[in-house]
Every structure is written in structure tokens, then in C-alpha cells.
Length: 416
Image (tube, rainbow, N blue to C red):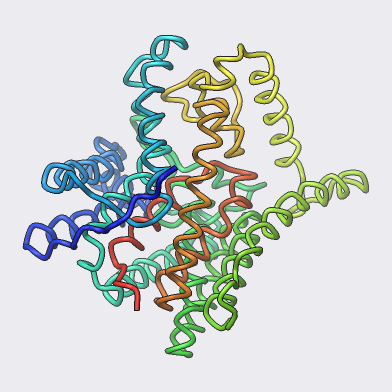
């Protein structure tokens, strides 16, 4: 498969900066997933009219502008090939799912928007990389994080959600915020997990910044660790530790090939927690954070999903059945809470293989950029992406990782 080469010169015109800034703002809103819904509910008496669909829609408009003005975008990175194949495959899947699985077109497109838009939309924005300052990006992320920390601290101390957990019209819901009578801090996000992923990213950013501004970096790391703790979500604790360790390796390591094997270790750690939970159950199910009832629920969900897949026809195994975890677009009676299984049920084993190769290629790109440029934001992005396999073992988390990738692309600089 031939590798695409020869990068187009980055446009320096006013429209390029305008598109980059618009994409940046929209991506921040998409990353902080509860920001717009909470603001709407506060202003509209608990109703959500637009939600995050607006931010993603504006991102799509920016993409269309790029495609119209620069139709020959080329990038000298291997993952562009897999991105192109994925886009072609998803276009084919629209027809397959609509015809073979009898799924309404709106449901197919809605599921695409929820799961795949942010991870895939970053590639066209390569043409506009460098139009957003990395320092400005870090300042914005840090400011948002400080606001989120204050909210999560209040939620933790009062043991109350304080913000809306569900809109009156049902268009927005905060999932899994109540844990055995304790409030899992979710701040301005749609779930404690998404908030914990954001805290993990900020923790890795603190590690990367500590090389240049030790006190600021360490303070950000400490605040991120505490904020992550308030989520009361074990997966977030694991992701936080893994992301910070990876940031240490990329920031202070010296070997050119550093950081290649750690994601596999993180994945093994994720699998090991399953066996550790089952071992705890054998010795008597403990309470609190050591409770394994959620693990048993997930094992039941995974078993059900696997049975659906194994009993499906060959074409549906290869190309999917259109089943998603989003209740708006499917009738799945149980959660899936596993990224590989979710991809297989939705767009089949071929889709799973293509996405896996694409995701690994994106992580390898971010790792190379982090080592070559030593930009703190790119290091943090690569560190978060190194935990993708581990995170995907227990949840479906494509959007959060995709938003970070877009931001990393927008603030990238030319390699030294």
C-alpha cells in the first residue's frame, strides 16, 4: 500500500486562522461534554435544545470549508492511508446498515456522529496545524480544568451533584454519577468517566510541564490527581496512573525508542483488574470502591453481546449489525461497555480491524511528535492515547480521545 507523501504548505491567510480558531472552540466544547447542556439547562429551566450536537456540527462545517478550499490535502504520515480507508468503509456501511440491517438513515448517521466524528475529523485539520498557539491551548485547558476542579470539589464535599443530572426533556443525562449513595464528581462533563479522562490528560500535562516549570507542573499534577479521585471511578484511577507514567517516559527518557511497549502493559493491567475483581469475589464481595458488582454486570453484558455476534450471519459479523450503546439509535437491551465488542456489533469485524490499525497509527504519530518536539501538550496527548486499549476494555471512549487528537493537531508545530 503506497504511502502518501508531500505535505501541502500550510495556508497562512485569515480564513485559515479563522477556521482553526473556530475548530478549536468547537473542540473544547465537545471535549467538556456537559458545558453547553448545563448552560442551556440553567437558562431554559432544565431543557436542552441543542447540546453538543452544535459543537460537532460546527466542526463538520469547518471540515467542509477545508475540503472545499483545499481538496488535495496530503499528509506524509502512514495513518492517513488508514483514515482514508476508514472513511470509505463507513460510507459503504451507511448503505449496508440501512439496507441489510434495516436501520433508518438518521440512526446510522446519529451513531456515527456520537462515536466516530471526533476521532476521524482531526486529519483534515492538519492543514491548519500551527494556527493555534500551544501556550494558548495550555492556558485554556488549565483554566477550564481549574473551574472543573472547584465544581468537583464542591460535589465531593457536599456529596451532592449540585448540577443537573438529567434534562427535563431527556436530551441530556449524566451517567453513573451515583455510586452506592456517594456522588461521583462529574463537574462539567456528561459522566464521571469523561471527567476522569480529562483529569488524566491534565495530569500527564502537569508531568510534561514540570520539566520546564517545575512548580506549575507539579501543582497541576497534584490537582489532577485529587480531581480524578473525586470521580470514585476505578478505571479513571488506572488511566491517570498510566498516562502520568507514560508522560514521565516521554518527557525525561533518553532512548529514541522509548514508549513503545507501555501501552501493551497498560492493556495487560486492565485485563488483570478483571481477574483481580473475580478473585475478590471468590473471597467475598467487598463493599465501597472494591465492590465488584459492576464487573459482574459488565461480564454479563459482554457475554450477551458476544452471543449476539456469534449467532449473526457471516455478513453481519464482517460488516456489523448497527447495534450501538446509544439508546437513541438502537434497541440494545443491555450496555456494551467494551470498545472492541462495540465496534464489532456496530460495524463488524472489518470495522474493528480498520479502527484498531488507525488508532494505533495515531498513537504512534503522537509518540513520534512528542519525542521529536518535546511539546508538553503533544506529550500529554500521546500519553492519554497510550491508555486507549486499557480504557476501551471497560468502556466506549472514542470521543474524548478524538477531541484531544484534534487539539493536538491544531497546536502542532513543524518538526525541528
